[in-house]
Image (tube, rainbow, N blue to C red):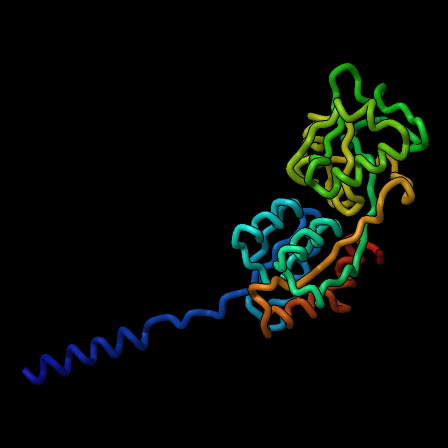
Length: 255
């Protein structure tokens, strides 16, 4: 009887000792879709320093902000515009004192790679001939997607919003809009310069004048529900010199 008890106890001990030790859970970052490639590269540097892998959630800034309102708890939130960061700040979903906007971007008009379209974006420019009878301009939905809001401001400044607004192909985020152009489903699109730079299936037709829309800036902030040592360390890294060099390499600029 004692021998059976001893063997059972030994078996339990072996099972406990052989159970794998759970790795430290990695932090979560909610980030605008246009930051996908750059942040993944920064994430690799973070892991190379012995830190747990970052769990990224990429989507439009509006979608991410709504997710935070509904209970999403990122260590860090990166928005593609200031208004959506304002929105989460007003709801106490970020640590306001940590908010900073270290990088910016530019707005460009794109076409499929094999397109011969040429245009100069100036007041009163006519883009309808480039769209043809049924073609549309692919862009993030101006109703809530930052790139679409910048696009609306730029087209309004050029005096052509009323003409072109019925011809928009409204996408859920900037990458979705760019994909329509890459596939040849839209003859033109409006995206960030950094997105166009990494898409082999598109080419930049023209760059929107900087004064035609509000500056494209990317605010970073720590999520209020996950503030702590890990969030602080990650935030410092994502906004620090090594990360800034990666963002620069991917085409982001100083705001």
